[in-house]
Image 1 (cartoon, rainbow, N blue to C red):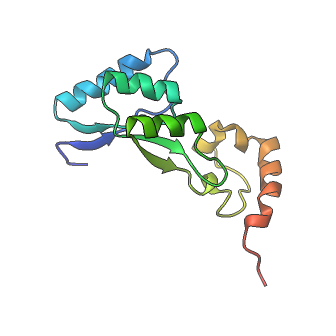
Image 2: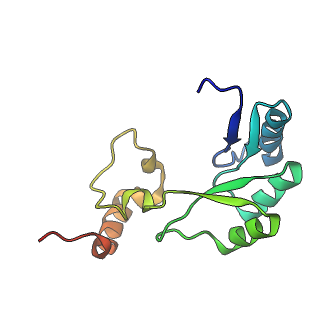
Image 3: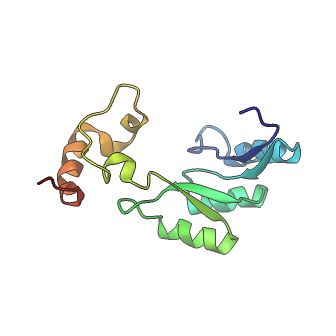
Length: 136
């Protein structure tokens, strides 16, 4: 990046083996050192957001948000309560709302998401077929 400061750091998917407050505290240390400007946890629950915010002010939460996956009501309430922004990831349903997903490469991160396992992949392709453009 060749930058002295990172605008925001988004710790992804809290590790159940590491206390969440320790992860947030490590990013807070980077903010204090001037290396990062903002903390933005990713893929957290409302409770995790509140715990993070108690350690260090949270600027934004990154969460999956699309027609397919709305923001959970509890998380939406928490971001409003705390004055935290939302950064959407996967606004096109990680590919489903942009077209048919026929298969995934071996190194595709979506292989870790249950909706992309073999059974769900077929069901979801069928479910969202009506949302795809038709050809003449």
